Image (cartoon, rainbow, N blue to C red; front, side, top):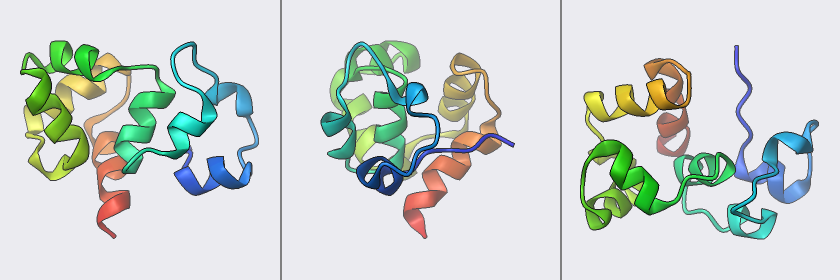
Length: 101
């Protein structure tokens, strides 16, 4: 099973494999400032709001709304995200549910 890195692990540097966090686009401090785990995951993968909106075929305002409130995402959006990142829909749901607990 895939291990997801939480914001708390990034801020306390408990992440065993820090190479998995290195992106060309975002610094660690920017990832730590994410509003939720889903936004942190997108930043770790280096995906901007504009790329996310293009991926889901929605406007940038709607994409930002989806990132801030992940409960607005539909199943077919989750399927598109899962296919893009080579993961299952259940993994995407687990990332979203982490903040709902």
